[in-house]
Image 1: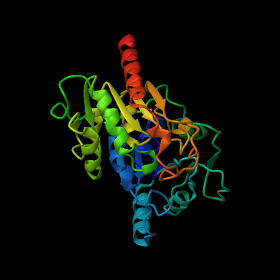
Image 2 (image 1 turned 180 degrees about the horizontal axis):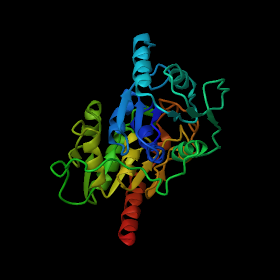
Image 3 (image 1 turned 90 degrees about the vertical axis):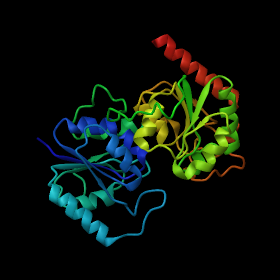
Length: 336
């Protein structure tokens, strides 16, 4: 039996995308996760996870914290006491695993694996090189295979079941979810554009608008009396239940897109090309990708849109979103 620590110090969406790698590694024995505060809710939703440790890493995140020696020492004590047989550090293509690998070494983890272009010195026992253009799920599974662990036959995203009962929050009829916000502003829908999309969809049926507590003004403006406004009314498990009941989810490149995929909901992805769609598109579910992938912002990793008017998304006509929703609905009916 092998005890494993998987490290993914990013947001909820990134942790959900790590799910297939977690599932593969958990076959060998107990598996724990080390995540950031922004990824903790998703970590608790993943199947096959025994325990979740939380560390706010000063080298990662949208707003990294200052370096905190006491927090580092507490992490070393926690990881050291667990006596893991191995650790697997999962990172995105633009991140280095070496700060985490150094702490794992100091905590006494005997085998550390990661994907790294940088020279790792003695920090890594398994140093994997990422192939160009790989989706985040594929890239994490490539690392798992480099560790000698077979890729799972089913590499779809998943969450724990049962999910909470969301029936009191959603319409009794079939509905579409529109999630306009995003933790990275450059990937969010503009309020007026999202409101126009909701209005067009509401002419065809029920619409539910979702968002975090901090997005309540946005969801209220977007719902505009034409849709059910759930802004700030769902935690992540309840949001998963709302998405699971939807015919289709209209969302940008943000965590709820991957949560929708994890519950099997088709996705209309309004995808701002600041990061490549080939790496971050919805995984394992029917989806339609909308948005100008050749816009001037493409590949910039910009956090705020560098182009006036956010044209890569705002130029997508509401009618195009309706057509994409209809196409996914029809495909679901045919496949059923």
